[in-house]
Image 1 (cartoon, rainbow, N blue to C red):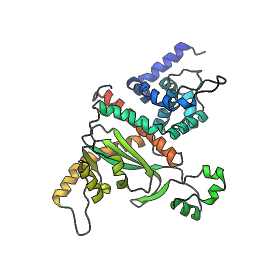
Image 2: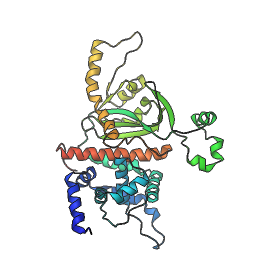
Image 3: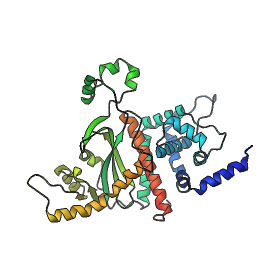
Image 4: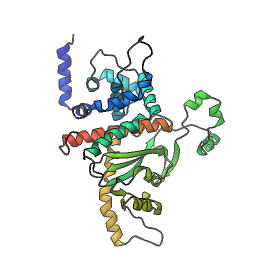
Length: 343
């Protein structure tokens, strides 16, 4: 029969492989997130001492970070925590401890969504990096990536009403059906390929590749429409691809004293000059760093932009946690490679 020493020996063998989450535990002071989370839930204090004691809110938050890193469903999250010693260790649990079930995990996510906590927690950590000089915002790169969600099976008339911003009567008459329908996601086309869902628009620090700001929109929203939500006078220089090039964008950047290094594009009967080609090439070498972020979300974080949630409020909350998780992982990597000091 396995005993305590067998358990500790197995953990020791696991930790020799340096699981990603254990690396976070060595670097991240998770307690920084406790106060804002618990303050948001203060009105939901138990009215009775009957029943099981609620799970620690910081524990639940770390479960969501784990979930976003591995892109797990609620059901898989519950199972994997029970099944994997490294997950238990990351959460500060031991074999035999009570583990939140999938319904509890889902409910906590819903509560975060309703309280708009994902964005606040993202800003808490990002602002800490900025205030400690780790992110200097001397150069900012903006870009967007599609968030893929389950495609809807609707009639042509239903899709037409949804596109017009209406809720089809067939949904209103059947609440259970409506709960399973995503009326916020949109179709769009890029490079001849159809995409359905949403977009994660990000602003990232060109030096550290830390995400400094983000916005979530339906997929049909043009990238240039969110530039004012991503960039302000605190940003020094903007790098972006040609999709962001417009008179409106250039005027806004000028008003905010932000240097524009947006890729120039050619127009009919107005090709780029050799000097403009050289300038584009120079700026592109910096702008391409943002692709490393989306590469991490796709490869290291298990296709994290493929999400099973529906509705823009849930997507915004999920993406907020995802972008925060990326920043935590990126910061840990920078500390481990001795590029920054622990804050």
